[in-house]
Image 1 (cartoon, rainbow, N blue to C red):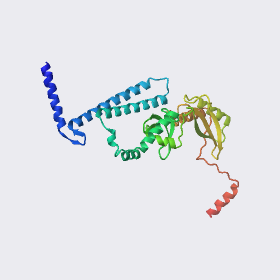
Image 2 (cartoon, rainbow, N blue to C red):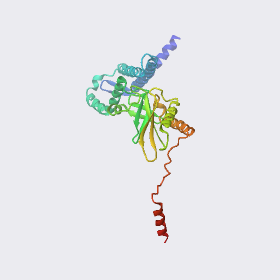
Image 3 (cartoon, rainbow, N blue to C red):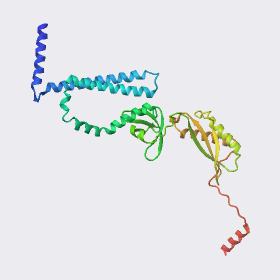
Image 4 (cartoon, helix red, strand yellow):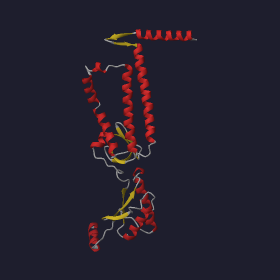
Length: 306
């Protein structure tokens, strides 16, 4: 048994020697197939260890329920960065890389890396600041500008480079962290999740306004998503040639569930109550024409016939 182990050891040593013999020397360093294999194994091994450690850190911080989402996320990112730094330093030590050999071109190389990663590093720092001051955190509802209109979306994730925001249309916007730092951001749930929604409608000019207002408020209060406090309100906004313009103002606490749908529910309920109580909406296609002198009109028509 010992003889077989000795032969196996000698054979393995001979293979390693053969792999090391295929290569060339650069100064005091040896570049060979064996050296390349060692580098690959060390890099892959440290990458696997780093990934496993990062996953473990993530699961550990998610169990720390005494901290809020932002605190857990920033702790997770900082510890993960520390893990990867340790892996890099361990890899350098295992491979025996002499960092002093890089001093000749390290300045120029570092300058090039600095310019190339300037935006990336800026976005990373901006993400850390956003998490620390809690101005934007996962779960917040913010307004996203897609170039033409402002769309409401919910923050799903704050990453190393960008913030992921998902709208009601299931569109996912990846906004660079730096943009949220330097531009004005409309955060609907920064200090409170309560949002006021405006529902516009118009009634005919002959409507009993007190009854109409009472029915509007009843309709608003009957919707589950509408908050009882602050209570709904109905205000006249204008008198027009077609009728009286109203605005029902309601409060909700779940803007991520949509605004148009709650407006629709209020309008449908209001329409039903209006029909039950005989309140009509203005007919914009109908026009009434008053004739002050019917006799003069008849004379004009007769003149045209002649």
